[in-house]
Length: 195
Length: 438
Image (cartoon, rainbow over all chains, first blue to last red; front, side, top):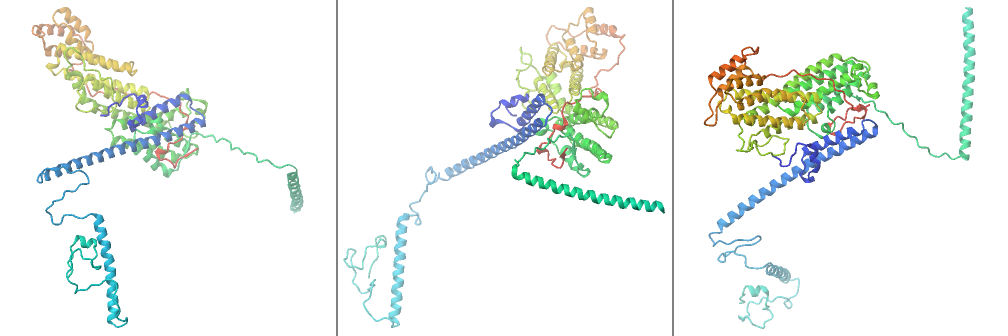
């Protein structure tokens, strides 16, 4: 039951625009039509005016209708989303009761510290590692190509370049001044042992 | 032989003259062209605005016979009784159909005319059949059928119906056809629709009458419910207490709807009178069957409710329509419940007062009368016998119950309209673009 729906059609004029219903538009049409009839009943100018007023009222009817439908739809959607949110919060709080009732905010992650597969490195660290790997890979490929060429006798045997992977080097300490043993990020993270 | 020669001579002479004149005309034209071109150089011609003469519309709508079905589908069968176009111009469908009629009449096409008229009648009948329970639909078509019928009369050329016409309207009277038979046909259709409107209203009112008029118990000390002040348009929610206010809300809804459809006020008055009769009869019949309704307090309650109904009539300016008079039996019954019922003088007073109640009804009420207060006594048998004696000379029916199904016969007095047909332009929302305004 619509509150504020009066039987007197003229009261539709006093309503707030956003509370109008299509019934109000029809009441307004009735009142305006009746009043227009009182002013003048003949003449093509009046006829054109009447036609335009009716056209405007028809457009008004469409708008009011669309507006009310949209309001209804949005309300329903909002209510649905609210209900879903409540449901999820309830589910979330009931399952986290096992780990000691944490309330998790939005955009947060709970990590089990005993999980061997837990995330441990930052994006930045990962980026650096990958860059270095790519570099080393490229260098390795170049070295392999050279080796091939030496083997096939194309290139004369000369001083080895770049990387010296000398397997006869005595075991060196971590702080060795050897030029080969660069302190790379990989080295830092994974303690290589050179033979 | 001689004559033929003479004629041949005349022909040759005339041919020569004709050639001569043709040459002359050619020469003149050449000269005229020369003078125009020579004057061109001396006087530059200003562009002159050619104004189109204002087209005067005649208030007709051109349509093809094949369009009749489409026309009636959009204008009758599928038309909603509530919308911008029809609220703005009450009776618009009737005017549109009549303007098409005028066109068929003007081109002297009797077949197009009769197809339109007959299809209109059957379409309206179809709508009433299918949607007879929808009060708004039935009211809408009662109003429009009457308007169409009035148009047929107003523009018939019959002087009786032309008294209030403007000069222009008189010009627009039907030129070629006499449609008096259709006056009768539309009149019959209107009566049919009237019966249906009473029925549809009855269906809505019946569940309300007894609770609102009889059963509702007012708060102690305060007669009647708290006035809401609002007489709402649509049916209220079921949780609301069924008071006389609720009944009045329905009546207001009916009245407003009929007015907005452009129903003739004469017809509205007859409808209201019929409504009040139904309320009166149903209430009284129920009272006559129930002991618990026959008390002094109930008498007071009924009189209050009747007063509210009367107030409603004044508000709506319907005081003279005869509705109040139909409530008379109910009013007298309520008075009977309140009046003293002991002495012979009382009996005489009762007999003169209850002019609208039958003896059977008076006796029944007295028999059922239940005193509420301790020391009040039931009506004595001797008193009832006294009453019977006083009334035995009455010549009346022995009916106890009122005939709640009785419908007063309806009339449709001619009501011309001042609407100027040539000013009507069909609103876009009616989807009648195939009609051409003439």
